[in-house]
Image (cartoon, rainbow, N blue to C red; front, side, top):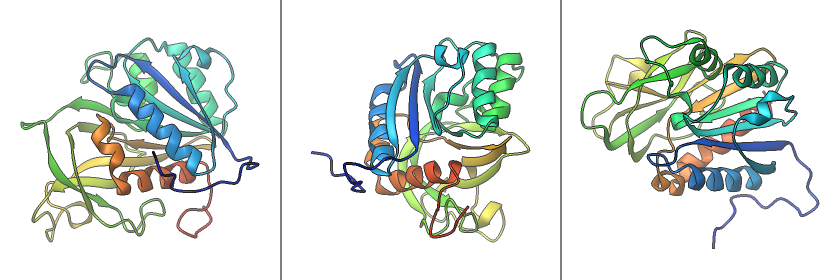
Length: 244
């Protein structure tokens, strides 16, 4: 039986969260991800529901938090504008793993993919050099409110090489599991690659987390803590005892 991280009282009424599943789960375990994300958010006090497909963004969406757990699938330019409008009006956005994989060529994104990468803050370019999966260390930025106090931790996960937008701030990076600290490089991490980044979009906030390829990652306490922190940060709720 799953043990909740937090115990909200039965009559608790918190901010609303919508976990959206869309696309092909042949390579990505979307339904496990959605279930785990919903559990984490519910434990954090969000009134959480799950939805299938992007048609909801053809209309106004008034949830406080929108969570994307997708792997391509139909997502029109008009629907992407609807999502952008919701975030621009103040909704928080959490996007995971394959959400930023473009349908068009990564080096020549079309209008729809540009709309999404501008909102999320990055787009997938490739898996990078082999191996495309490894055991690596995650180095959170100690200077950012979202990640302050989270110690470096190790996970086994798929690699992504990302093209990060100029307006996005990287708050966690991956590096070699051993000997990753050096005197040079981002946050002192050698061969670091972007893993988590945040940005402001209109009145809303956005956080992209590259983790989430398969069910192994959801059992990691540090990952669940990171998600809880991210959900609160994008909704401008108190994080690490500091009002955002």
